[in-house]
Image (cartoon, rainbow, N blue to C red):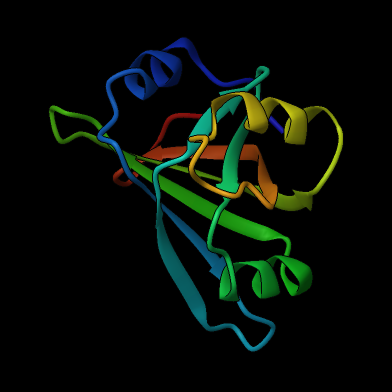
Length: 125
């Protein structure tokens, strides 16, 4: 687990609305979704609200690795890779409930503890 660099925090504030979250099944098949209800949390985590997860939730149960891709408004891309877990209570869940849109269910929250950050082939952290 790493601390998110200031560069990533600054770029996150300029990200396009949706991010791409990719998880992997137990048989190695990737699944990617667009997510709009996301936030940085603490010094090393990304939270993704579960408003429509199905396959993503199944994948989190069997494979604890994920990648989140975000693109800035200037079209620079960043990949945040790390371990993913799922919560339906606790601090991260409670935080998600404060920023998830009121018209969305927020069944739970996926939490990525970031281990690596890339921009293209360049390793940032």
